Length: 253
Image (cartoon, rainbow, N blue to C red; front, side, top):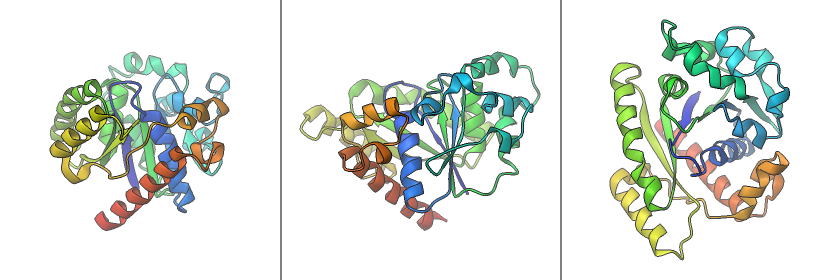
């Protein structure tokens, strides 16, 4: 079972879009996938048509120990989801004084072994919730919009990963950089991709997620790109990315 945090502390880079559609793509490749929404904004939850504000059981209640894992899971189009809602915004303060507060999510997932992939959609911040995700994960995927400022913003994230690796999780590695909202016609985009590749090498997936309006439209219908418009560039790109993820996973064990 591979546990992967999808993270970037800058918003608008395609983080939730990637978590949703990579998860959906992997299910199309016969993988059993769990998505965990660890963002109080609940964008992943809403993107898959789950009405966060109507939920009784969410990741917040699960981390508190008030409900079981099975009571929290929602299934949509072959994807299992641990949803979030605004209650999760209280977690940073409420859990701050708890012993072992960085390991709450790990305790939840210790007994879970029925999935091939668990993808965690992290909040665009580097607080306690994100630390929980990084502590339980073996791998990190970073979606990066192919423009200058999103790339510059990665420095703080890389520092945080180093600290977590030293103090909490020595097995943590950045294993995937995903270039999003890419337009090969733009010189800036090509230059940013070159810089990212020069720095991260083969960690950069060769599939770039092209700028595609269908990817922006799909969440408003509560659907993945495959269920919304399977013929779109977005669907093709995320399916190709899913194939690459699966191939890497098999090669690396």
